[in-house]
Amino acid sequence: MRNLTLLVLLAIPVLQAQAQTPAPGNISELWEIIQQQQAEINSLKSKDAKTKQELAETREKVSANEQRVNATDDAIDTMANSQSTLASWAENTQIGGYGEMHYNNLDAKDSSKDVKEIDLHRFVLYFNHQFNDDLRFFSELEVEHSIAGDDQNGEVELEQAYLQYDLNDNHTIQGGLFLVPVGIINENHEPNTFYGVERNSVEKIIIPTTWWEGGAALSGHYENGLSWDFAMTSGLEMSNNYQIRKGRQKVSKASANDPAYTARLKYTGVPGLELAASYQLQVNAAQGKSSEDIGQGQLISTHAIYNKGPLSVRALWADWDFDGDDIKAAGANNQSGWYVEPSWKFSPGNYDIGIYARYENLDGYAIKGDTDEFQVGEFDEWQVGISYWPVENVVIKFDYRERDYDEALTAATYDFTGIDLGLGYSF
Image (tube, rainbow, N blue to C red; front, top):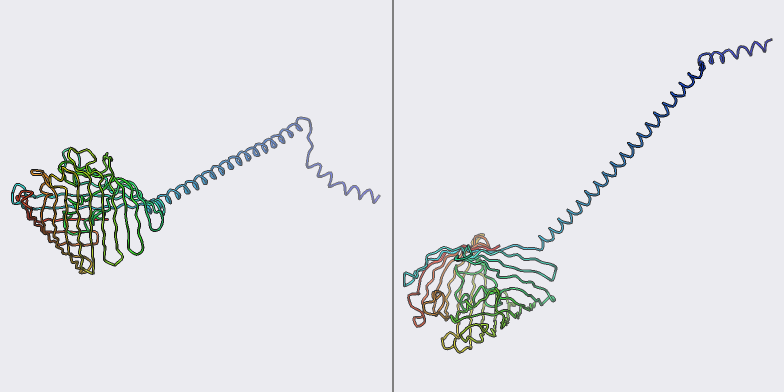
């Protein structure tokens, strides 16, 4: 009896729990429960699909961002390479130039030949580039007298455009259009490097500075101060006016029937001293095109420069000899000139002032009535002047000139006295 009572007491809580969760009363209620469960399952599947889609979209965004990052990296690398290339180009490329403006006030014995003018004589730009340690390029582009074109006074000229290659530490070779290695100022003619507003007459008429030709040259330079140059180039094409300067072809479809050869020896082994001599052979100074027999031409020139403290002395001599019968008959076969120029430079403070004197003697050739007679012929010229450099590469110049022509060759009415003012720079 006691066991039966205990069993009944234990069964009561189980029966109460079953009574609190009623079982479905019929099939409809059971179906409804199944539908609810299916709906929950579908909802879970929908959420799972949405989650997968969001994950896929997230992956696409991450991938797109990675592509943008890679593209940005590539752009940065490209920009860096471009900047590096530009920096390398800028480091290896030089731009420079020079220019000069002149005022001339010259009084001739014949007043109709007076000169009163102001002229932007030259504007020049340099473009040079170093390709590597051994190969480089040089160029010089010039505008003369401010404006060029038909019926204008000026010209646009390419005075240098050549490549230079180092064969070794002491020898170079170059080819293209370059300045002939002769004289003092033909290769170094920036206005801040020489005295006088105008370039000296000997190096304009006898050595026709600025004088460039097309061809090739070989050079040697040694530690003892000795150097040499040898060039094979295009030549002059002189005509029956026998004027050397007019014979320059300027490498503009230049006749190349007969070449010219130039050799120079220079010594700079003593501080402040430069000694040089050059020889040029014009195989046919008219390129076979003149109706006059000009023949072969030979130029010999020598110069000396000595600098000692504030004192400087320059001296140059140049002589042409032509062997043609017609130029001999005209008395123009021998054309020569020389000058000497002492100078003294003061250096008060941060600027320089220089004074100089120059004497020139020139025996060129001029035809009576030639429009260039004022520039050539046989004459003596004295010149004194002063130059002021506020900085090294900027100069202001003043000079006084007096020229006396030989009446046997040209009219004395071309004698003149006058002053010149100049402003020059280089960079």
